[in-house]
Image (cartoon, rainbow, N blue to C red; front, side):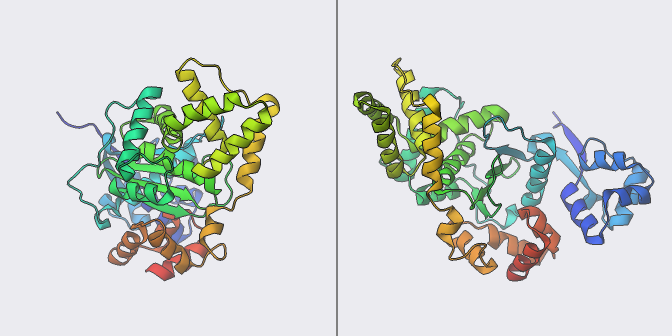
Amino acid sequence: MNKKAKKNLKLPEIKIRLAAIGWSQSQLATEIGVSRETVSKWFKNKKFPRPAKLLKLAKILSLSFDELVLKLDVSEEPVVAFRKKGGHKISEDYLEAARDKGFLLQQLVSYLPYDCQSRPPSLINPKDDYEYVQLAAERVRNEINGNAPSVIEFGDLISFFNRHHAVIIPVLWGNKKNHENALHVFLPSSMTTWIYLNLDSKTHDFKFWMAHELGHVKTPELRGDEAEDFAEAFAGALLVPQEIAEKEYIHLRRLKSTHQQISRIKELAEELIVSPLTIYIEINKAAANHGNPLIDLEKDKAIYRVNNHFCSQYHSVAETLFDETPPAPKDYISCTKDSFNSSFFDALSTLLIDQKKSVGFLQAILDLSPADAHLLYDEIS
């Protein structure tokens, strides 16, 4: 049976070429002889150009048909995921931009030091069920250190990512309030995962986002809300083991005041390097699993206020890693290799040189300003 396929424009390359000649979509529309709305639909892959218009587009941008058009097996389209935050909605434009990154990242795969003939191990029939998630988290803790440690260290998570063909891409995206603190891109054709992690995040949040992304890595077949819900549950279970949650529930029930309960949760948050809110949620999940009454620390939003204050006292990951922020390109690249054991910049540098990619490629793949892109490009090309 033939695989279902479709033709799309190679938007990342087209946008880079368009920027290089300094044209807007409106200028392109005028030159080709179509409306601005038509070009907009092309750039959102909602419509495909007719042959005559496609030929004009190729001539204007000096691209061959193969450079311009992507014949895509839909099962191999990049899969993107964002960690949900509250009720924030992710726009289709943002999703499209993330998928564009996926097509650019695909060009780096052959430069990675991975065995492309083997598939990283994943979970079978994953589901957001308490007992399933706890068992999955326990298995991963055993895989990480062999003895189900109560504290998962940053280095443990980083090593685990590498063993699962997951490339960490540290980025400096500022203080984000919504979903932009972590972006997950899975490429089915190569079974590789690319994880953008925002170094401007606070330490305790950053660790949870790493664990959340690991949940995605272990469940590549999940999509949409199902994938996000599982990854969220998995992260909490990985960082706060069920045994600890059950033990702390008994401890908290014996304490006489809300203040004492919150103080104990903060102590545990310090020990496990996770947020107080994560501790609170996992303790109550364990209680609910046994049919026990929940610990209630939500009057006047007490646990949420404590959580915000607790996390705000710590430096961002970038402030911890670098002597000054933003860091110099050389320091940023060194950190990516040394602190995150990531092969991203080695692969990127080789690609830029081998294929003579422009600075626009670098700018698009990392969401950099033109000035920052040029500084980094000079350092690695």
